[in-house]
Length: 416
Image (tube, rainbow, N blue to C red; front, side):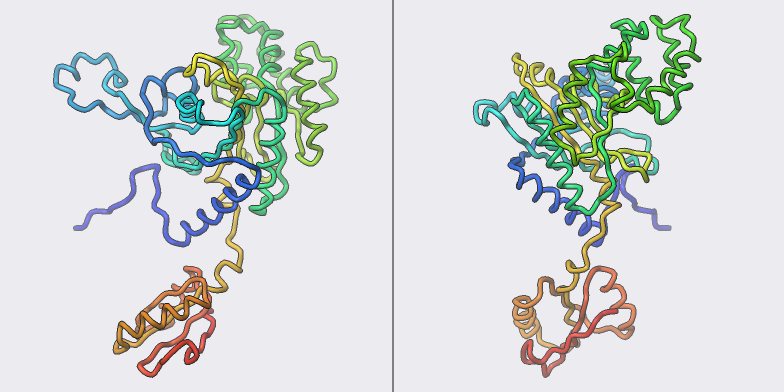
């Protein structure tokens, strides 16, 4: 009995139609980002294990795939205190940590303000389920070396234009600042050593609700004895807060809020919505954070933020940095190929006795007029053949016989 041959769990094969859709989306995104002056780079799929586990990746570090060192012996395996002691490399779990390493390596070769595009697969040891994959593509744009809000403005403009180019409408941007979250936690009585754990809990608000978050928060040492009901009420109020309702609040970092308001004024068409409960799970964010939301979906379509402290970990000197990542795997499901993409794709159905040299010459001639040409041998069941070709994006076909001398002898008919 033949065994079932499938891709590894959490990873996927893509048939031609799916691949075409993905490449169409990627081409649109690349075109927009190039138009905005971003330069595409490429980094290795593996990075030094110590770098990937340096505390910059938040919970994603726990999901990193490790690459075992070569030449390990049985005593090495027995003496290791944990799996990471056996690894010297790991698959990248995002594109931001590799970018920071890239910039630190090549700073002298790059402009003072560097606008980068990275579009590439990343790997995380997720539990496979709907919408969660162990290999997926990220589309990142980052601006390094610009400390002012111009960087955020450029990222938001480019991202908005990319969504428009894909035909994705109705989105808005949830926006917050890590400084506001820090002040908010302080007013609740969260000690500095508990702040990271508290942010992880608040980040679950969409999943477990205000009461669930409050119940987890009061288990932190610095919030022991705090009434969960009071925190739940506060979280419910924060979840519906907007630009006007938070003015004068004692927990508000006024400088950070003023920066967010300045962004809103600079980008009136970006549909920015203030959300004081927005956390973004990555541990490296230091300032502005944002996510693309859509009223029809419970999940985000992208996000990012400012991470001014990351590059300094590698370079020994802080460099301002901010980035935005599109949720490519989610966006590709929302985008359909335009009909025009298939209008010029044709099939030449040939008889068995047509000479190969004649077929090659005919195909070359037809390609001057059509964007995509395929040769298919005539079958007894032409209906199934043509139906399958139509599903693959071909629009018309013509029959080639021994008497076909050139393109003028062909009569193209629609496949459907």
